[in-house]
Length: 377
Image 1 (cartoon, one colour):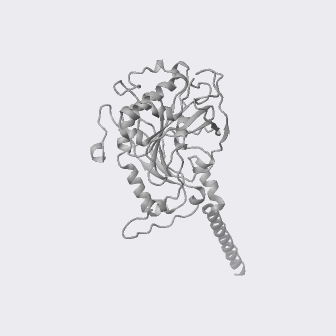
Image 2: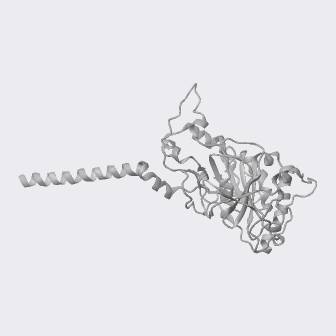
Image 3: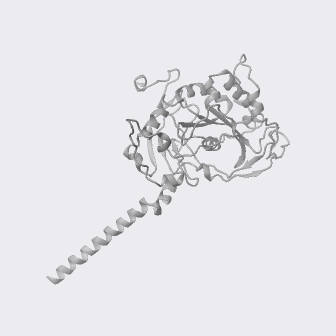
């Protein structure tokens, strides 16, 4: 009998020890002791505040497209900045896919910004929460319903407004003109979602249908190496002056090119805006053959990751939607998403990274874009 009691006591002691270890492990993983490690593995976005930039003088390049040219100079002698290299693999997204694009799964997620790390595969895309790291580690307070209204977004989304001043930086083997042509409308960090995308000037015909559905800020990185730089500027002018007013209001253009393919002249942003486009002429991207472009002649592979990261890093809002310029979002997506954030439903109260799925639909060529689910069916 005594031996039996000792066996039961021993078994009970082992069980209690296991329970204690599980509790301690769970506590470690859910608190600051382990959250940094877990979130670093799961986070996909870059922390905008982590970019280390040091100023370096710009020197004139010998000629556009010269393989030895790694430096350039603005016509107004602007200084530049040097940024750390970043070549993250990123993804595509949009709920509506026109033409013959292939449909893919997509997600909206909120993640604590940490060190640069891996991102979703090429068949995924995210709305990323660029929340300050200290804020992300705290549990958000439940919304306060005052006079029947939901808690204000500014109180719910704790973020900092970002400057849209033009700046020049070197990113890996590329020069980047951030905020080269900024949109006229200014946004607070909490009041919208930025659509971040990239392209060369031959894709600007997608801007108007995208903006009509998005109705929010767009951060667009334009690849313009060598002699492609001049027609890129003409295309930007034409889009701003001759297309929808939404272009000049909502789109901020960034321009980037390789250090071995520097344009002969890089005018200041002020001079680009000052010159007007001739709207009586066809758009610069109409009837352009890819074979005549500088990037084709120089056999330059399109730098997808650089374009995506440039557009993402320059977003002025707390939430961003990385996407392709040929993918069109559903109307009202911004307001519906922010309404969900404002409500602060129970799943949003956790500080862990969150994922919100968005379906993508492929449309046959010639079919009009649906405005809602009823038209989609």
